Amino acid sequence: MHLKGRVVHIVIMGCGRVGSTLAHILEDRGNTVSVIDQDPEAFRRLRPSFKGDRVTGMGFDRNVLARAGIERADGFAAVSSGDNSNIIAARVARETFGVQQVAARIYDPRRAEVYERLGIPTVATVRWSADQILRKLLPESTEPLWRDATGKIVLSQASVCPDWIGEPVKLVEQSAATKIVFIDRLGEAIVPQPGTVLQQGDVVHVIAKEAELDRICGALAKRDGSGH
Image (tube, rainbow, N blue to C red):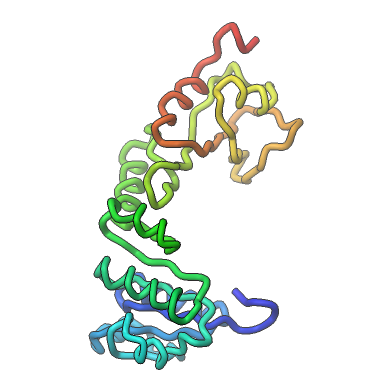
């Protein structure tokens, strides 16, 4: 990740498993990274070869953020174990220091919509993890691959009736009143074009309001006389 040929600087608040993993990935991609944590013992999760700054303190303290290089940061990630700390720190980074790319991890998905309205992208950890586990336990279910922070919009894999094979994707979309955003065809992701037709083995993915998902999957799983 580079911006117009220059090195990107990212500040991460929280040196738990997520924070340390992010730090290593970003550094491996040639970026500079500063990690903030109020517990100096947390920095043990960073590998010995980590070249970034380790800053001890509260991630929403302006002086601490300044020591981490927030004034030159291109991005800020708040991934500590506290929802309130994460959102406050993200807001300080955005509103006080003008960092445009910010993200905050939260555990309570009920707060996600409020945070999104504040302009802070969030990752609702508990709900995301639950969705992923359900997809592995119930592979035939319609548990989403992705869910927006409010929990209302989802990306989901959907089974398609064999009778649709050979038909244009546009016709399938019209019948199910949905949008097929991409098709997994033999392990390759394909964005449908106007002339794309469904082939044997295609796995379709739709994005929709979660309240509409059962209806859409039901419509794709059958084809009545009106489709012929």
